[in-house]
Image 1 (cartoon, helix red, strand yellow):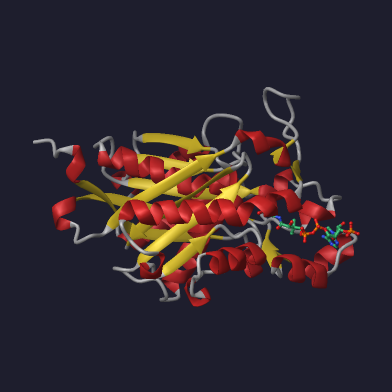
Image 2 (cartoon, helix red, strand yellow; image 1 turned 135 degrees about the vertical axis):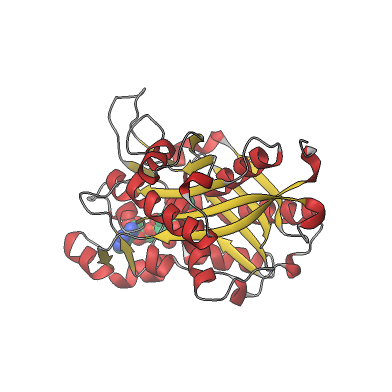
Length: 328
Ligand code: UT7
């Protein structure tokens, strides 16, 4: 018998993360361009970032993270029937990086596709996976955020080159009947986009425009001005939808663009700063990978536990932004 869609809940089963071995410190960047460790740390909080090696791609990083997430969940690749990969730096224009990860993991026929919402990609991907799990299109989903932003940086532009890094994070989501899930699962989402701001953060190339990959361009201050307000609104709406107060949340797992943005959101919403998971110092901005990387780090170091209420939020190019609430 098919379970009625309204009674299904998407529940967390496991997570994994992977960073390239090569670490680039701010001091190394000082030797490459007109910047200083002091400027980068003061304006962003970033101390270092991982950069993919010549043989690494978004798909190989994503595959590592996904394999660790499956092990954490106690599942085999053959258990997965949905792969959603959030990325803006796909290995190829097509096929989707999700299908490359599927092949590398040896996952048999499943549904697999990429979600492109830049730094908000993982929140978008979780929302899409949640919807497909709830309607019974899949039973076990791999949701991946994987990026190699180092490949789209203009290394002569100090205003962007110092900000980004490479990496991947993954989450395995399964389904449970709501009545037996004991309140666990993805509880609410708030997704937003406003394409009027597309020119404030973009890549100046693409398959259909110029026919080359292009490089990242950002008007950082203008993006910054929108970030705190946008993120705070999405968090408030997400909490209201789930019927929880911001104070009820155990952990905030934000997109890691700039420590000052994290502090601004915390101040705006009156959050306890100890509940905010911050990895921007070590990872830099890894776009769609930053949320699952931060989440996995805080789970594995014992801060985030089963039963905790976790808020994910992000904002990025488009603009896109959003929030998701998960009871682990
Ligand atoms: O993940 C997607 C979303 N992205 C974001 O949320 C990023 C949001 N924006 C930001 O995080 C910040 O705006 C930045 C970190 C990008 C820049 O910080 P800022 O405090 O807004 O600096 P600014 O752009 O206003 O630049 C201040 C000064 C400028 O010099 P002048 O014109 O005052 O002489 C820049 O040229 O800092 C200079 N500058 C640098 N100096 C040393 C810019 N980049 C650098 C650098 N090293 N790397």
